[in-house]
Length: 115
Image (spheres, helix red, strand yellow):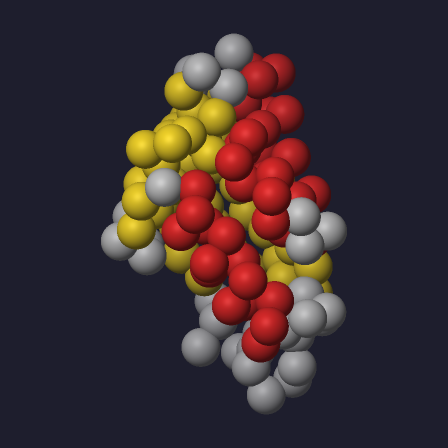
């Protein structure tokens, strides 16, 4: 379970960084829930990633820490490639917790230091 959870987390950040939106279908469960965005389904992730990359095309998410406990993964990341007028600290930090089910991300909670 730990290896599966780590692998799907790494795939999510790699896909985001590569602008590989099609990968969302294999990373997120069909009934995926994003609690911060109040959205469901992998297609909601594609829409969010697309909007974010349209606004910040150079952004890269770097995983700083990943902790796994059963089916839950907590990740601290830093965001690189953002314009200086958008960040409160350099680089800004995100904290995300997600739950993995059957090798896919089923739920996600998160906080970010972006304004």
